[in-house]
Image (cartoon, rainbow over all chains, first blue to last red):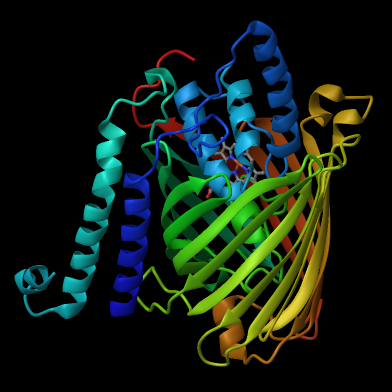
Length: 102
Length: 365
């Protein structure tokens, strides 16, 4: 029990200090957060949508039937969950989130 | 800490649990504070807590004995700030049989905590997880286990080998090595726990997989070392392929451990390309699976406890799934099991439903 508490404490303390000391984001690519990427032009938005659909097709039907769209705030939670569970890449998740919230 | 322990008096077990709860709470404060500070993500795109999970009702006939199996498996997802996620899944499963073969149905309700974990997405290569998590060995437990996902309701014979839930720390992630290959990995350490609902073995292990998004092929290996009792090693291999041209899902797993070894190979084919009765057939999936288990150095009681056959066993499974709507499916399966204890037929039929409800305002879709 004691060992467990110590390990858990150490990890949580480490993780939370890393989190608190998190430097400001340098660029979209450096950031680990899961926000919807911002398209700078409508051409870019179209390209991202196409890419997003491709990533959705390659990834989101692999384990279960590909789901329908949920409201954007739910989709943001779901892709975070799937990112961790399914070890999907950061880039795939961003594009899928963009596609699923358009 | 001294103060905390003294406050909780002379029951060290309880004091420890409470102390660790407090520690967790204090460690979470920076995250909670940060979650409160204005965020560059617009309000309408900020993740909302979700209650999801699945519910189902199945009737199983196993070697002539009928069993009714209602189940509900809630999953709670609580995102904090833009890098944290608390996730938890509990499982409540009834197993009701007729007393004496003719009496009223009765039985027990199993309750499990499958995972209760805190995830921190450190960067694009690494997520740190602490708490109770599904042991990342092979693919069935982490990816296919929920009843709304699995193509065949009976779990594979080798399912108990190497997997279950662990209490400890896990590092995992997935990233692309180049546009054609993604790598994913998970490595973990688990401590021994005999606490009710949080039972775990002392182990360490890992899994590495390569996913090719073009041909949609994934292959990977798992390994595990027990750090108690026999200090046994376990090894696993997995493969999955979803060819883009046909609605086919091919999956296979092999595991070897002290308790046994074996494999399963499964093919699930969605009838969406059949040119007639399109309306019904595009929602229909047929499934076949072949599997074999070679019993290990394990006695009858242990085998029973782990849910493993204690003799060499072969099994063929056939299933039919009908996807009624997103998250809802009707399933039926037939399996034939061959071993020296006598061959048996296993039938299952029922419904599985996945739900997802926001625990907060989501605004218009």
